Length: 282
Ligand SMILES: O=C(O)[C@H](O)[C@@H](O)[C@H](O)[C@H](O)CO
Image 1 (tube, rainbow, N blue to C red):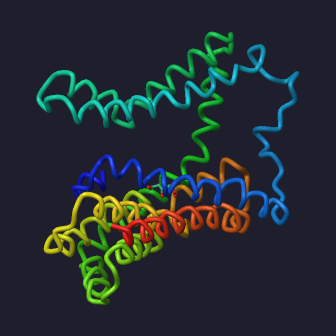
Image 2 (tube, rainbow, N blue to C red):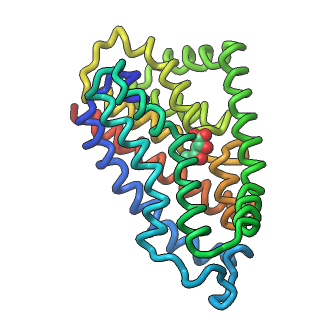
């Protein structure tokens, strides 16, 4: 989304994305986890603490089946993003892909498949499936609320002109454009929470600054990575991702700040640093 708005080169995006994500994944994943695990101890959340004998509907589903259901909506969304670049926008196929590749439809289809494969086919009664779905929806309430509030706050930023003012202050700071992109995106992220909104707002603020510079597709790809990195740092109470980790992993707010927030900051900052290093070589 950001790459196409900035006209970044698709090929460079994949290469730079890999260069940024691999170290980010290693640092934020196993390395950070092995350090923080010594400090923060978390029990398995109550809903996971089920003995084998208590499990309903026969044996535990296979790993391949479970992962396929999780990956299914991502495949549909990916299919739409990639294939629709190469086909006529007015064709039926394009419209169908837009329908099944929309996150709402893709996740709804995955849920229906999960109800059937993990529930009905394993002889779990409908009432029980309904009960499981309701308990899964419960922690989502606060997440939806925070996301909604984040959207409202984004509009306040836009309508009040604070976003533009912030953009102008930073634009006049004389910082290299990649660092500027990172700081802009990170500031919006910290203020309103959503990574998606941070990226799109940063995009809108940086496009007018980029236009006169006539940068190539590779430079624009590095800037896109910097915007992506900035949008991930410092996830805290106004980000739905924060509450997702908090609720589903059964963490306290303090533990979420110690683990999730730091992990997100490591990932985002690594992405930003890699983008700065890449752009220095372009
Ligand atoms: O609204 C959003 O774009 C999301 O909620 C994100 O903010 C993620 O949850 C996560 O924090 C990304 O790392």
